[in-house]
Amino acid sequence: QVQLQESGPGLVKPSETLSLTCTVSGGSIRNYYWSWIRQPPGKGLEWIGYISYSGSTSYSPSLKSRVSMSVDTSKNQFSLRVSSVTAADTAVYFCARGASPLSWGQGTLVTVSS
Amino acid sequence: DIVMTQTPLSLSVTPGQPASISCKSSESLLHSDGKTYLYWYLQKPGQSPHLLIYEVSSRLSGVPDRFSGSGSGTDFTLKISRVEAEDIGVYYCLQGLQSPRTFGPGTKVEIK
Image (cartoon, rainbow over all chains, first blue to last red; front, side, top):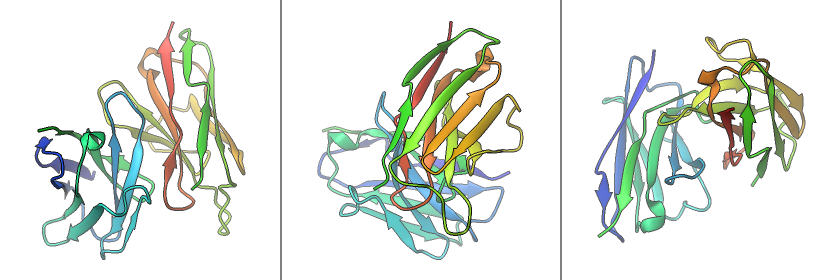
């Protein structure tokens, strides 16, 4: 059974870049799409985007100018970068398998604060 | 973007009683391949969401048969035939027809 685990800094300063990695275990990263979704504290789910194992991407229009995703098939990992962060980017960030997520990681809280 | 709405936004249910959640999309979710890309997720307190239903009415393996999905086009329903205490949490619908993917605002289900 595929498992996903997010990792990265829990605290990022305003105007800096948020970077997270999702490690996939129990299966290959190949032949699937991989998504990032976030959830501000006490709020609903917001789709950030997805990347295919070959590197093609689709991003949320509201975040497109600040978001990039990449995949490393040799490490069975994919990554998210969000630049120029503000307090509004504070959220639990989830990685997930599938463009319409089938399985999710446990999530990691990223706080944007000086 | 396709806008997803859900009603009600909160629901208090007596154990053993049925519950129903409505999800509406601003555009039809019917794809040219004949499938309708509407998904239902449950996020239990303190957990990540997990998929219950895909393509309107297909239950993921391991999901109890008290959960059922129905609907077509722009109108969809998730039904729980007999609510159990473990069913509490927030239920979200998601449209998977096009990017950007969009979630409904969520329906919080509590036990009376």
